[in-house]
Length: 251
Ligand code: FES
Image: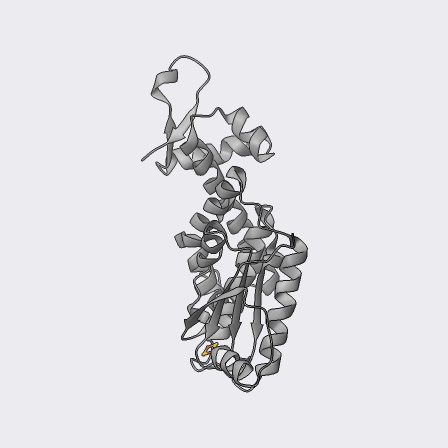
């Protein structure tokens, strides 16, 4: 039996949503696999909606906004580009196929283009197959979601460009490359920490067990654990006193 992908589409009210309407009126055909959510701007799509959609059983997520320069809120689509780029990075780092997320531009007059973009994306997801939503993948998606909802990543997305424009206290300007490195390190750290939290939430684990599950060096795992214990997010399992310390989630 052929697989019919379930797609969640976020369409900007001012362009892609109207483009979808035009596609319907003009009888440009596209498969009925997508569930549409109308948003006022592609910039309104919170990155955390993406892992949530996969957790809810969707196989792909499509975000369609106005072409660059045409956003009704000036830079909403540029914000969307940054947010979705970062989300894709996080998905890749977590071992989740980031091709299941697509951001593209469709204007109100591009009915034919709308049907083309949707058709091509459905075909791509069909080729990828059903989203492999098993227990491990759920854990990964929860960690991606928690990372995207965290203050650090939100701050980086919002303040990133400002950091390149304004000198720091030492009178230095941050280069694009340096900012990219900082973002990369931050999202990796956040993802690993959230993966650890999500793992010890299920059952108490030793540092060795965590490092083996996450394929991390023990020394690196311990550094993250020290930081999480310091932040009060992870603690020690009291029932295991005197034995190898096991870590558990601090509620
Ligand atoms: S208003 Fe359409 S992307 Fe911003």
